[in-house]
Image (cartoon, rainbow, N blue to C red):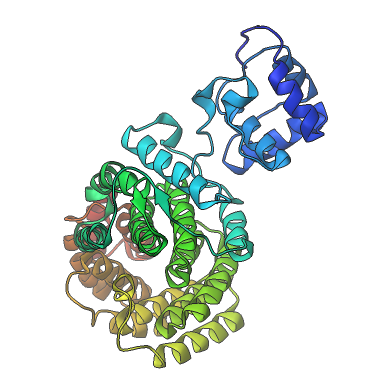
Amino acid sequence: MGRCPKQPNRVLAELVEEAGLTHKGLARRVVERGRAIGHQLSYDHNSVRRWLEGEQPRPPGPGLIAAVLSEALGRRTMPSDCGMHAEGQQADLGLEFPLSWTEGVDTVTALWRGDVERRKVLTGIAYAVAGYTAASMRWLTLPGPDQPASSGRRKVGHSDVDALRSMTGSFRDLDNRVGGGRIRQTVVQYLHSEVSPLLRGRYVEQVGRQLFSAAAELTKLAGWMAYDEEEHGLAQRYLIQALRMARTASDHALGAEVLAAMSHQATYIGRPGDAVDLARAAQIGARKAGLAALESECHIVEAHGHAARDDAAACAESLRSAEKAFERSEATAPEWLTYFDEAYLSAKFAHCFRELSDNRRAGFYAERSLNMSDGYRRGRAFNLCLLASARAAEEPLEAVRIGDEAVSIVEGLSSRRSLSYLRDLRHRLSPHDSLAEVGDFRRRVAALTV
């Protein structure tokens, strides 16, 4: 810990006293909050005594202390308010679901700015275990609705919102075609340079709701791109802030979509219990929105969570619910939901059965998933890998043939998730390595995914 003796930190002493915290209690809460975002700290009551004497803890200490005091005092407290250097204030940037929509603007614009500037605090950050649980609970329980009207200098109108939605559509198409790694920084730069001024502009409530809905959609997409690159801590922060903006917009449908994305990520990183909880929260939003297709998606991500927990009965029940809701799907849907069609549903069924080691049914649904729309090159690579993995045990040469097609697509993508799918297929083919075709394929994949 950095030793920089200064004058006694009377500001911090007053805040600690106001919060009613003991030295030991403050240290414990700071350590717990640090652990939740991937930091192993060893603060104790002696650490607090030294802070009060004027010592400055190293980052992320100041930011964590300010966050703990914010929670205890019921108002936002920054490191500078605690008599500490501000460089630590971004230790948990974007991880909290802000209580007010105006705080949400401050948080998300700081997240975009820090990402554009490649702040070290946002590089390689860990996924926070409790982050999504706290965000989804606040999304469900926060009173409202918000009234997003602003009196900034720049006038914002419907044409600005339309332009933002148009750009989001273009970015979404590129993401599906080339992978998140190719364009994520471009998206973040656009959010920082073009969307931040809009959020701080001048608009009436009706325009404000539409603006926050559009900004949430693009922020969710940026988070999905980070997830595609397996930057899970960064993706988590973007999705939490996307959820906050959807809440500001009173857009229940988009909020449910963001929660479904969180569930998707939670299953992928090995937290299927969290995935189930997030999917169930998403279902509440989907029912409020009255979108059957969205409700189907929320059931299918719950099914995947159950499958990853090896709970076949609960998975089957969620799959049935997903099918029933899908049968009621509307002829029209929000643009961000148009990907959810019969091919996507089949792919998710295949994922579930693969988790349950039912290769026959996984293969059946993976074959159906290939009847997909043009433009989803990354999705096609995923689905080919799904089909190949279902064939690997009994038909290794057929799996190689299918896998070769997947490799030819992945070579043109920037998507670490695609590489993970190929690694999984390579592993499933390892028992057949003595076959020349299998050995050649496994070496090709190894060279691509190194």
